[in-house]
Length: 284
Length: 103
Image 1 (spheres, rainbow over the protein chains, first blue to last red):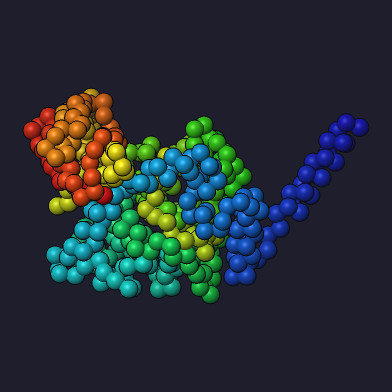
Image 2: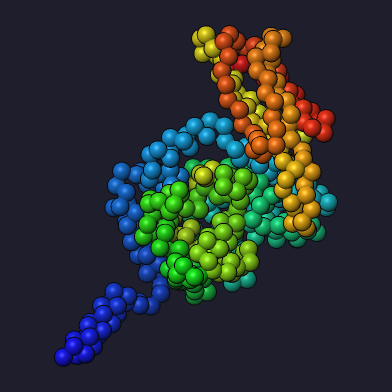
């Protein structure tokens, strides 16, 4: 009798799982529906937070932390990086060209359009990757990802785009949709010894504490990048955040700008469409 | 090269509130680099704030102070438009100075 009941429960659980996770064929419409559900979830959980304020990460959902942040922002610690980035951006390469020649609108006010899906190469191109491709096309060595000049340059480019809402497009191309789906899968897949998914913290436990830190809501989480993180004592790019998150979950971090990370950035940025760019940011 | 010093000084009636951020590695001398070698000490030893030729704050800093240090204080006096001179000297004898205007 007992055995029978156990088996029945198992069947019931299996049924629930199947019911909870229907797998509709991915399409542009399903991506748009994902986005709406994603944003509605955060809106309904944090009804007091104005939508645009999700660009401010943990500060949008935690009042005491916000107060500290406002104090810090009287004198933002990313100021030096911003200056360095501005100077570097204007400095010509050995061949006389500049970064401005590589980007639409001279590289000013375009952060919200990244990452985008490149139909020619069939891959997701992030701002960081575009910067290094620009350098290589002009005979310069690529910059190291994660810190240093890459963070300073993206800080400057983000600063010129402040207030512009994320405007990520998924073109009508099955490869673009596949990249989006891969990013989504990465975001919800549990990994590492701690068996965490990105979503465990940044959706399920957003706004709650993880030891001393407040977990940022996934909505708008990339809007403030690159960030000066007090814990790092320096600037860091999205790659630095992704790799350190991976390590914190006790999983092996991927190399910076790995296609999986780029797809993840594509997914997260698309989910955050409408949230204004607030970078460069500061985080505890 | 932009200055290594950022200052914001605000006169509000009797007192002036000063905030400053200094770009400096502040190496303590106890940290090893990736190849295992000690990074030699390199930190600011004194930082001075002078208003109208009068020293309003001097601090002796050492290896315990963080990288890119930030300081905030207030002093009596100071009016809008007055110059405020900030100077730091580190243990290698390097120095930088900046004259800011009180706002």
